[in-house]
Image (tube, rainbow, N blue to C red; front, side, top):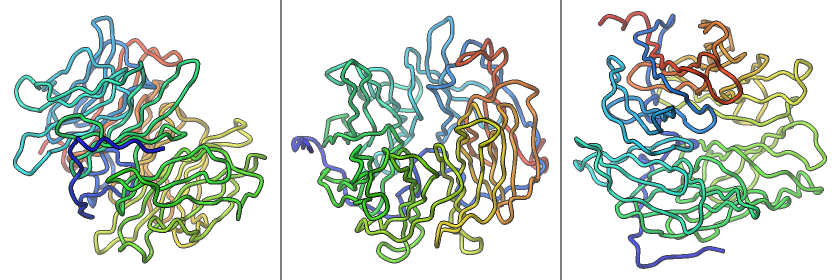
Length: 423
């Protein structure tokens, strides 16, 4: 069911260069085609104090600096730290962020805004002195509003209810006013994946697990019938990556994983994002939840697809980080590690992929062959955020006194190539 709200401003026509090639996390914009070199060193570190909720806030970037959610004895809020030195630039108090924040401009030359989902509201603030509130969207029932993504005049996000009758709805709002454009029920809480004028969602239907909605109006463009691979049915899809570095209809791919309802290893699946037809499938020797990272063409380097897979059975079935051949899904190289509080979310920077491993190690692998090139050990302090890239710097947060989901103190680290430190 799609509900349209015709009185609200519709998003304008799409421009492929403005689209995101994966889940839409803001930091991807800042790492596109950046070069890196090893080793890295700590350019600065910032004691955040308080108590940070590991499971609820993620690092993101805006034009001014790196953004993080905090929570402590003095309340909670969202703060921005200067790229150059870690000084706090601004704070928006009394906001408890879920997922990632997203900065955007309605039109070129207009002030930058930042949108983020919270408990029972999604709000947009203008990043000028005082960070004035542009608008707030409040649902009719208490819900979590998670990880908005801005594309061409609209903000797309997931709204999830954890009441006695849980439900998940995907919504499109006017980025100018916060008014609803359309909404559609979905099955999984994922960062929006949008491209070729479609939004890709998990349906919860074990035989049609993936559908594409027209991003302008929410109408169903196609549904993928998985019976050709798993006639017994599949579990809900949780993550996707969209390769858009090629024209629509040629070699474009929407890549995800499918799990049979009967169990077994992951099957990587590539679909045509325009038609929903199957390009290829490949059953791996891995199982567990998968996260993706995708590098970008820059005219000289190859396009790489990296996946991490969570373990289901401890040391006998470890976490893995792998490079995937996008033409057929075959594994090119694979490395094992034991665990990851940060969820095993890899990020690609130049010729390397960075990953949080064993709860307290930040590690860099060479994209071409998986060689272990560099690592930094936080000495039993739990790394609480996936790494992100912005302004030729890698950012990550660790925690001291970590116990399950909170810790007594957190530190934001800025790692840069040694050649840039002090310059």
